[in-house]
Amino acid sequence: MKSNGISHGTNHSSPKPSGESVNIRKVETSDEKQETFGVKITDQETVSPIGKTPKPEPSNSSPVSAASGSASHEENVNAGLHMSSNTNSFRSPINIQRSQVVMGPRWKGKGSEAKALANPISNSISDLQSSLLKSNSQGILSGCSVLLATNPQQTELLNQTCFGRPIITVDKHKQWFQFTLEEAFYLCFSLSCMKIVDGDHNLKSNDELWEYMVSKQPYFVNSFKAYSHLRVKNWVVRSGCQYGVDFVAYRHHPSLVHSEYGVLVFSDGNANNRLRVWSDFQCTLRLCGSVAKTLLILHVNRNGENGIGSCSSPSCLDRFRVDERTITRWSPERCREDQQYLCKS
Image (cartoon, rainbow, N blue to C red; front, side, top):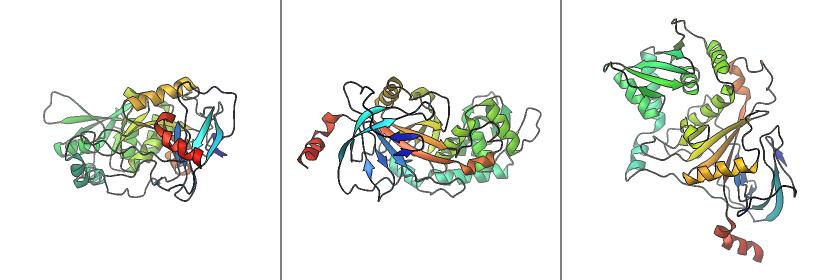
């Protein structure tokens, strides 16, 4: 079975990491099979297309949303997970066992969940969009970031929606925000609420911005597609550099809830060389587990458009698809009752 660069087949040549087995969970739809192996990988096809209005509920469905179909029966078979050098994969003999483990949100303090329900992120983003449009806001390109001067209302809305980071200046009446390239292009291209100029105050078109950002950040095409994929589902997305991942995803504002996912972005034929050997794989899982986060893999399926010049404009994003997989460590000692049940059956 092969799906998005990851193929499943028996392989007995690779050593299994000592001390624990690895389970992978693959959930396709509520009516299809759910398979788990002790590094659990959950595969989802429930992608919200860019351009649809995000739901206003703050209690967002998980990026691996709607994976709630229950298995009709349980099976225990030997399988292998293979990753070729071109498809960001790994190889190991593993056991598949049907189950579903979902880590819930960790709210910060009493009443945090109620505050989030009363103030959906989608409402704040709509208010921010209106405010930026009304003031004809213009960001300024500055290397690998974009700077924006804001008024007090916009400052509050940007803080609520977690776009950019405030910059401390001596002018108390004017606040500046610094955006990453993904954040700036999302506001400019996806929300169409901000314009961007260069250092000489020349207005940049979307195509010109795209070309500039791709030249500044080699993996910008994939990272922006992954970023917008989560943002359109009302997840708050921040840099994950302190956790060794591309992004971290919050259900609501970071002051109310801890981040639930550490996100790594992959695509067809990318050359970032991550998670290709067991040591990298285990290090990433251990790190995410130690900070109570689930590792989420976003695979950007570019439908073969990997050549130079194949993504010369942002219109190529409409032809891409994002596949989601969560990976978690699995210990057989914790699932001893399940093991006994499987033996009896």
